[in-house]
Amino acid sequence: MSLNFSPATNDPQAIGRREALKRTALLLGAALSPSILAGALRAQVPATGAAKPVYLTAAEFATVVAAAERILPRTDTPGAADVGVPAFIDLMVGEYLTPAEKKTFLAGLAEVETASAQAHRRAFSQLVPVEQDTLLKRIATAAEGKQGTFFHLLREATLAGYFTSETVGKTVTHYDPIPGPFQGCIPMSQVGNVAWTR
Image (cartoon, rainbow, N blue to C red; front, side):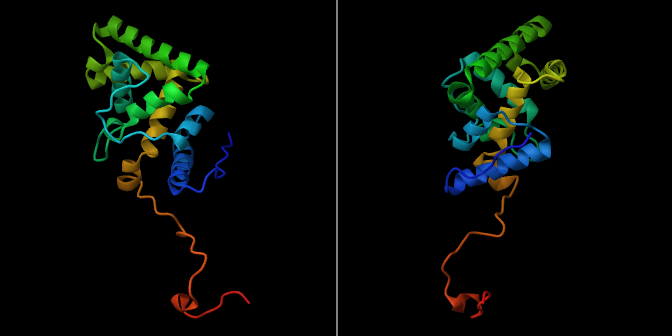
């Protein structure tokens, strides 16, 4: 799948996000849906794990927090919840997913809770990590070979939210724009008094 990353704005923050998304898609092999891509380029969410849901219910949000943290847990780098991924996913559901994607995502959250209750008699967010991982692996296995499933949307939104967050950009990926900023008018004395074009 070819993604078009042509600049739609001169905003340096948007360009940084675009580059982060491109690298995420290429390195992790994740094909981002157009709605997640659009949301990642435009969404502004606070980088905090203590955000309150705006579009999801408290129970749905708790499931998202737990699932995102299992996809990208805290290690020597921040986890998904540390950089505001759950708030990002909440915003994606409320403002950027298509109606069909939103329906798929919300139905998937409900299925996660049903499976958790049947297997452990507890909410997904209350399970220990190994139980959460087992349940998510089962959902991921069921999604193999399919497109547009709940798990695909969850993974895409988690990766996009994580790798476009300011915290990850500054502390994990260490984005350094090469060749550097454009400076259109520099005095010749600052570049060694050499005219490079003749």
